[in-house]
Amino acid sequence: MSGLRDATLRVLLLVVSLAGWEALVRALHVPAFILPPPSQVGAALYRGAVSGIYLQHLWITLAETLLGFVAGSVVAFVVGTALAASRRTEYFLYPYIVMFQSMPKVALAPLVVVWFGLGLTSKVVSAALIAFFPLLVNTVVGLRSADEDRIDLMRSLAASDMQIFRMLRLPTALPFIMAGLEVAMVFSLVGAIVAEFVGAEAGLGMLIQSRNFSMDVAGEFAVLFILAGMGLLLNAALVTVRRRVLFWDPSQKAASNGSALKGGL
Image 1 (tube, one colour):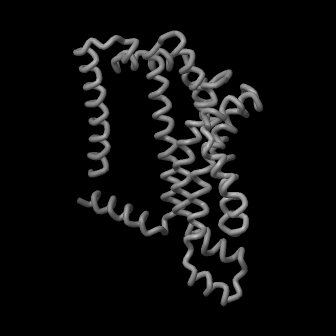
Image 2 (cartoon, rainbow, N blue to C red):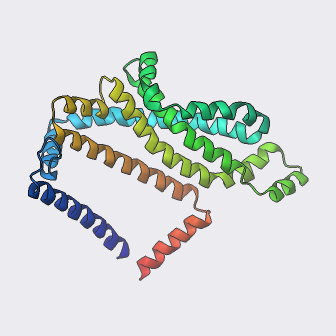
Image 3 (tube, helix red, strand yellow):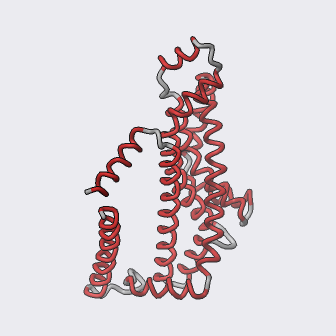
């Protein structure tokens, strides 16, 4: 019952927020080209859904986001593992990684589009670049958070470095890695949209640009709502994966027990 009540309150909060938005816009007579009321945004969503244009561009942006997320995460995990395993490697590589990360990706996006073209590749590269750093940092911190006493104990039992990594370092780092993945997923979506703004043949970012040129502000808000919903669903998928992967983690057990207790009440 508690879960149903919380879900109802979430929906109610959304309805109240939209109703307040509608009332304020109409009461203050805000022009639609500045801030359209939710009713106009809903009408734009309906028209786009009926025509199928949103779905067509959504799949392209989703593919760019997921491919960029996977590419950036794999590279970040490999590099993060190398940095965590060797202080010397970190000494030489980490400053360059930080310098590269300090460059604004909005400024790099035009170069990426010039190098890789207007198609899928440039969007994937842009998404991967933004998703890379959060997971890299979390991977390094997580792998180095293993208890040194346990590492010494395993070495005293003749465990190899690979066994220590697989049985101790990686399980210890998983909560950090999963947290980094959640951030990286959101950043991947941002990276794909930024690259689509610079130059694209299709995608939700390109659709926002075309709505902007035609002064269809309600249509822009409709696409923004679609992006917000996409980000929410992608995050929810990762949260579900985290709960299944980290079923042994005390924090996950505490959250599960808390939910069960609320359900019982």
